[in-house]
Length: 228
Image 1: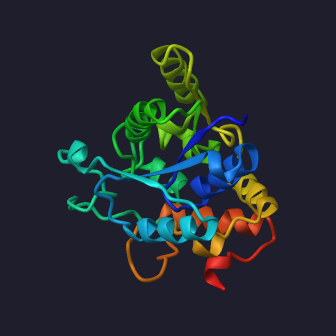
Image 2: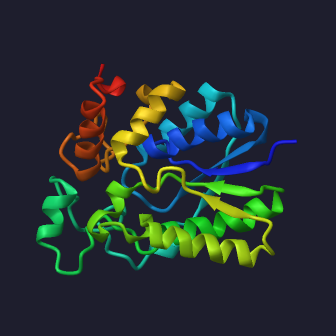
């Protein structure tokens, strides 16, 4: 019998590719997508997640962690007065002495994975997938996407669960272009995904994640299906 897997699922490129990979490895019946709201400005990804779940014929779980970030000024959050930077992560880091971009949500992945671990254990899962990749970790822009963070968090989850639960980060050593390459193999419905940090009707094309998305498709010599 195949293991049951939980997937942290936002409706973006990385998590949707993770979802498709988990389905391939475990079978659709053994996969539980978990979508987490945290007060983000880009609520369009919630709509995208719903469309993708319909595409795969899955029922997901939802969790709202918005109150945890009520005191954060992170520009990604709806209550923040900061503007989301319209430049690449590399450019942003040049002017950030702390080595973090303004869209870094404090320990977000740590909180997400810890919360998911409690739910996964209660639902009989053996593993939790999340879509961290090395481009996001580069220069510590998002330190909770790094290999070191994953290894430490995986150890904590494994020990804290009595060695019955582990983390899976299949793209932890991969670039976003590699993620898209794998997604193309898996026939991921990228036309349904949403990446932009701005919650407008159309992607802004200028924020860090829009730039990364565009570069990833260009590296694979493919037009972004969401823009066709």
